[in-house]
Image 1 (cartoon, rainbow, N blue to C red):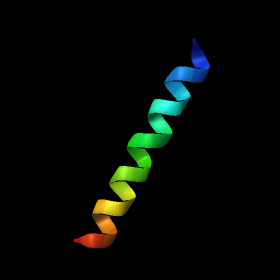
Image 2 (cartoon, rainbow, N blue to C red; image 1 turned 90 degrees about the vertical axis):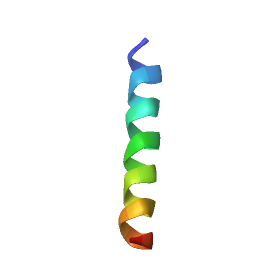
Image 3 (cartoon, rainbow, N blue to C red; image 1 turned 180 degrees about the vertical axis):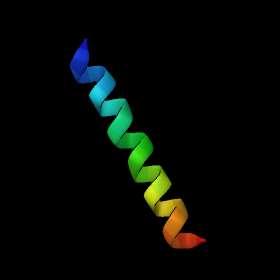
Amino acid sequence: MLHRWFNAVIKFHRIKQIESLTH
């Protein structure tokens, strides 16, 4: 249960980081 939430958070953080780098 917690693992899935953690995975989602990591994915979101990664997308945010990529967006910040592209911007």
